[in-house]
Amino acid sequence: MPSTDAATAPASSTWGAIPASDVSRRTFNPIRDVLSRPMLPQSTPKSSKDPISLSIGDPTVFGNFKTHDAVVKAVETAVRSFSYNGYPPSVGVPVAREAIAKRYSHPDAPLTADDVVMTSGCSGAVEMAIGVLCSEGQNILLPRPGFCLYNTVAGSRNIEARLYNLSAEKNWEVDIEHMESLIDKNTAAILINNPSNPCGSNFIKAHLKAILAVCEKHKIPLISDEIYANMVFGGQVFTSTATLTSTVPILTLGGLAKQWLVPGWRIGWILVHSRNHEFDEVRKGLFALSTLINGPCAIVQAAIPDIFDNVPDSYLRDLNKQLESHARVLETELAKAPGLDVITPQGAMYVMVKLDLDSFADISDDAEFCQKLKWEENVEILPGECFAYPGTVRLVITPPKDKLHAASERIAAFCKRHRK
Image (cartoon, rainbow, N blue to C red; front, top):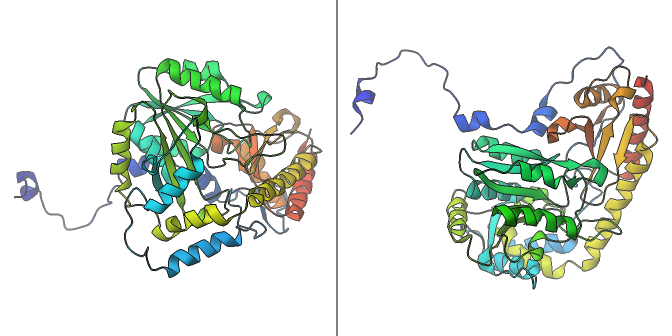
């Protein structure tokens, strides 16, 4: 039966504006916002040069980074099997979960298929992990600078984002004292991202242990976003956080997007590390959240065992070497530009640069730097405001080297033109 109020509500002869939901109005992605802004006319001449975009972390854009043939063949095999055209289990196709557990299991952090939940990309893993650990009104500790999606998801769910500082002087290590100072009785989780987007940094074991010590002391679970796992440069060693503790419960996030160069395939996962059953209720929660979309693409999930088995180890080594050579182009060339301080990248796909704003005559902040650069040189990079870290810019290293050289030359010329 309809409610009395509904039955007696006065009829209206015209349609009014229909409001968007509170959740949608709280949802804000700074990167998408910046990229959708119209370019503001400047007093200087507008560039007619070909555009160069170093803004979005999609390694496939220019075609110079391609996934291995075995990855494509694995999907072809799954398609032609006609076995994965139906609805998959919401937590994931069994063969995929088994293959992921086998690949990422470690003597100090063992996994079974039951510890794997499939998601729609690592972005979906972020949303599920925050959603399962944090309730409205609680808070989560997030890195600054950090990938803006973390803040977007938290804000959408009315979860307070408390940002702990990373230190550029220490190659973006966490300010442990500051992190700990943000914790209170409403802190539901701490999130780290290693290797880092946007910083291109990689934490050593001792630093990861210091972060885990904070979690242990305050009994706060950790979300470890490791979408760039093993993507580190010469002299660096990647360590998965879960291998360093037997007591702190951790949700480790990963996916195919970056290492296998297929971000459009939208396959991610959550690995549940909980030795002492702290996450028993969280497992039930993850299952419930997985039913919202009933799992990502079954065909690509089914291809994962063949991808892991048939892509040679040399593929990742070669990929990391190629990424590092690109990073060094930007690092070397941008170091020649006045007013820029390049933080040496250690992994992932990004270079973070500090701006000496006092050295520029007519640029007041990172957003203005990027706006004017795009207007005058047709080079698109992202301002630090996207990562809650003003006074910096982020550049993607995956365009072809000739593009990186050209972009660096344009940025250097731009800096020289605007210096005091």
